[in-house]
Length: 129
View 1: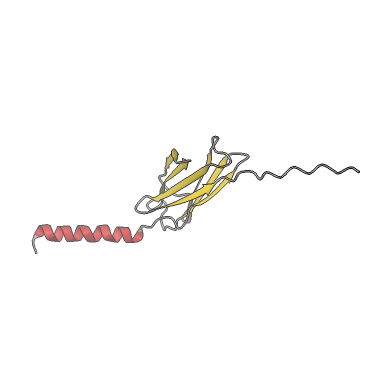
View 2: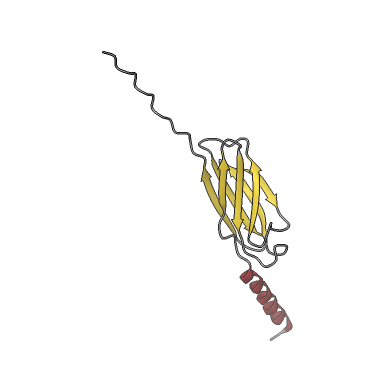
């Protein structure tokens, strides 16, 4: 086996080993408070070292338009990444899409539809006789 083939094989093995330990977030959980316009994002992502293997980016789309792209240098703890955003333009009937990406490999996306308020039928007028 020539030297180039050996170096290529070793490099391939190292890259493959790194991706085995990398994984996307388990989930992306979205909560939105329509009164305060606050979006709460939680991305469970277990890691042994939250400074080397972590959720490295969160993107938020409102009705198909990217409005937030935040990059991270570490995770809040070894279990998850969390982020809160004020989305002033979001309202009833809008769609929020949040993507959380591992800094090494993998990402996960979640969609949240902001509910329209229920419209109650008007009460019938009282009948008089």
